[in-house]
Length: 97
Image (cartoon, rainbow, N blue to C red):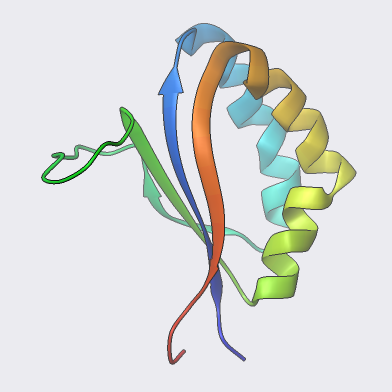
């Protein structure tokens, strides 16, 4: 079974309010077995365009990654995130896991 990943690039407009999203997303991530590989650490833009923050989460497979995003738990957390940040998120299947 090939793992899958959420790759997000995010600009946070209100860090204090964004913390509520981070607290709320923990329920969905625990339920679907998400593992943070990258969570907003230092980064250097070398090509193209990006945002200030990069996050990469690992899931056991593509279906689980999609189910997490579509879950009521994550959608409730996302409702807290949307007004205080802007970003891009893709779900991508891993290679050769």
